[in-house]
Length: 77
Image (tube, rainbow, N blue to C red):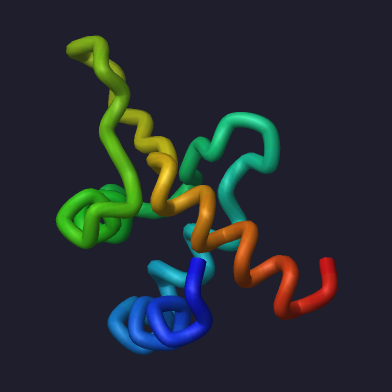
């Protein structure tokens, strides 16, 4: 992800949304944040709801995973 896009995306997210992205499950991208935060990430194009009805889980999509990986590279994790 280009650095300029990373900076714009980081400024557009709230602290809770950034925390949800960085704290998502490393293997699956599953988010463990409040529903309001998850739906905001869906609206931002970074997450998707679980595809089966009745489930209330949200997962980072490809763009969300790339953003998380870029933040981890910057932070040296």
